[in-house]
Length: 294
Ligand SMILES: Cc1cc2nc3c(=O)[nH]c(=O)nc-3n(C[C@H](O)[C@H](O)[C@H](O)COP(=O)(O)OP(=O)(O)OC[C@H]3O[C@@H](n4cnc5c(N)ncnc54)[C@H](O)[C@@H]3O)c2cc1C
Image (tube, rainbow, N blue to C red; front, side):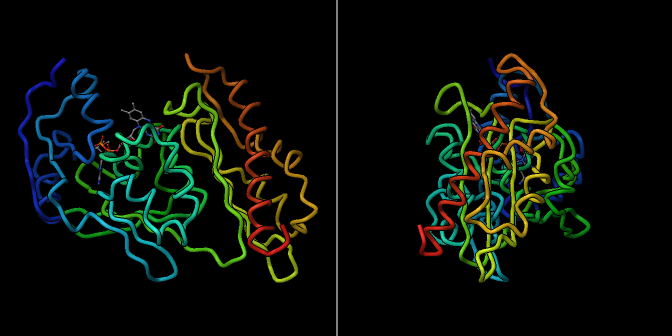
């Protein structure tokens, strides 16, 4: 099928892009990698009078290190996030999550900003952003503002970015070391969207006690979810004593799964909480390795 006709705009700056979005409001839609938007237009699941192509806006591309973390431009391709050395070193969860996104052809075009702005609850980056308390930089014709990950994901495919706004960049904090990170998901076939997934980060103090825990989940609710019960149970524990399987089961309390043609809600809850335990065990093993006792 072909999309309904639209006017195509190719701005070269953020200022030009937000001016177009401001002028056309609900009738306009930004185009990033096109891996979600183009199929939806082609299948006529959606239509817009104006498409604002961001692919020539150079200032939206790239990874920058600073201010205790990493800032990633919204148009940075998922394949760049996957292979960038600074991202792998400073925000390992993004590096670990990336290969789970579709296939490499999709990651070559798809962008981190598109993935987060699309806000599919089964997507990898939104769950990582939520787990790590990432921050979204959002621009409009009247200026820029920030949204925390907790404010950003409002409901399925709905975010804090208004139709006249543009997601400009995402910021992720770098954790002090030693720390352990792990990501995994359950999917019917490699490359499919996850039925359930988990992103875990664990940090310890000088005595080996857990003083930082971040657990993000995907596919187990209408938005990405945070396993607050698991995080609370981990805090203060000696990392060596943590029973990952038992603590992981607490994650079921933080899920709000929706059943669909791919899996029932009950399957997502049970498989998801078992998975959280496994990913937690992997993160603890990684932590021991980094701390030099594993
Ligand atoms: C076969 C297949 C398998 C896939 N598997 C996965 C998977 O396992 N996991 C996963 O996460 N994704 C998967 N995807 C989706 C893929 O990751 C997309 O790249 C991603 O969801 C959207 O990124 P994009 O850059 O292509 O954005 P687009 O498709 O161009 O845009 C997506 C939406 O975000 C909006 N948008 C984009 N950029 C901005 C911005 N800067 N500011 C405001 N709004 C913006 C657009 O207007 C649109 O509404 C898959 C896609 C396909 C085709």
